[in-house]
Image (cartoon, rainbow, N blue to C red; front, side, top):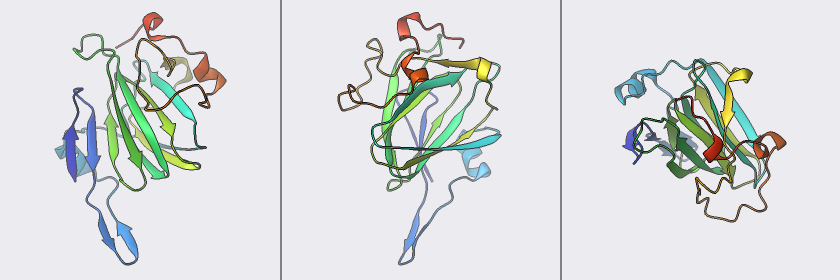
Length: 182
């Protein structure tokens, strides 16, 4: 597998080695030893999966310590625009984001450690998003910022006036009023 760093310390792009043949393809979606060698020394405790229709924007979410979560994310079907926002107050990239496309065709994975908000926008109907997480969900520890926040000015690559948002995500605070616990 190939591991690529991003301009934001801690965020990694993982490109697995894919073996295609006339029947389809095979690849290891996770191998603990290889990921530890790549610097992802994580103990995954839960796998989550969601399916979304085209135009759905989920996020920006995280969990506050001591329930913070690292996430290893990928797309099993369809495609998404995935984003992580640095909320580590002592980080030189605090408030900056990294954005990329994940799809069933490119098989890329994205490692997002604790200290980042995370969200994604679905580019196709029935996009299936999968993520391994390092801590169990805790409702009282939910934190987030509105995905359309003008302070973050995330360039999704399209207008955000017709996105599908949950009422919960629509009611998240803007970044200026967000108090990061990291």
